[in-house]
Amino acid sequence: MSGSCYSNRVAYFDCFSGISGDMTLGALLDCGLEISRLQQMLSGLALPGYRLEASRVSRYGLAGTDLRVIPEGVSSEQRHLPEIKELIRQSTLPDPVKEKSSAVFDNLAAAEATVHGVPIEDVHFHEVGAVDAIVDIVGSVAAIYLLGIGQIYCSPLPVGGGTVNSAHGLLPLPAPAVLELLQRRRVPVYGRETRHELVTPTGAALVTTLATAFGPPPSLTLEAVGYGSGKLDPGYANYLRIIIGNGTPSSAYNQEPLRTIEANIDDLNPEIFGYLMERLFTGGAWDVYYTPVQMKKNRPAVKLTVLTPPQYLNQLVEIVFQETSTMGLRVLEAQKYTRPRRVVTVTTEWGPVRVKLAPDEADEGPQHYAVEYEDCARIARRTGIPLKEIYRRVERLFTRQQCQASSAPPEE
Image (cartoon, rainbow, N blue to C red; front, side):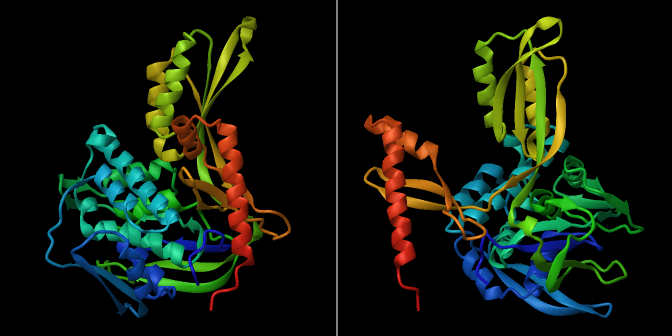
């Protein structure tokens, strides 16, 4: 099956023994993905010095796949978040793989910044900056894409105890970054009588970024089950189990957790609101808007609303308190539903312009599309052509391109 952002396929991560990056990748391969297809996609990432090795294993009577990233002549090195994201950006990976891989690293960096008490731009990745961890994260996202999985659910996570050696020294288990990631998403957890690391930072970053919800399996028609082996021997079958199936119609839409920040402000210099919006968008907000409201004692005020993914909540709350006069604010939990979409490029006389394209799920109407504002605005500024005229021309070219594609003979 080709990777598709329109698939109704749902994956359930059954983390009865925890989760790590290599367990995730091993389980996805065990679901039927050929390793050659994964290697071909990962070849678009300019990351030398490793090879993938997948083998069938049996742990306490249960068979599964053990995935290993074998270093080849290149030592592990520290990397900063911008370096990793630039590596992903310059790759030839599909756009959904780039976006989700970068989101996983953003999530992990935010957690590391919080637990170490440093700005996010100062975070040094040690173990997570090594080649094997980059391959685990990008490879897992790529495997999800290749298997056509459109939505992920996850079980509650088991946590153990004890300590683990890290680049920062001896740390308690669960690792501080893991707990920060889990509490940000309010992931349900339960204790296990073990002194092993059951949930690694890489595994926690993957599920807290990609999973729609944590709890029991959703309604689905089973298609595949895979077991990804862990490297530790806790005395039982140490696997991550991934269950894949065809989901209910509601799973045709992408779902993401959403946090809404609200504050009513009645005593702030209006000139500051523009700067505030700029800082909030830079801090990771999805959207920021202002609404005029009438408060108690008939005072006119501005209601600030910020929409954000959970991983940026804390830093955006801090920005609101820093930049405004409010003494308090509200944080609401919500769910964001979006049409599955892909990005196509229209070639124009001024250069490429991106268009977001969402199909009609029932195939009974026209495809929904939106021309990328930033691309058109950049052209308008450079050429002096009115922005509305740029939009018209791009839409005509896009429509012509789609008609030509639909009338083209099928590939052999």
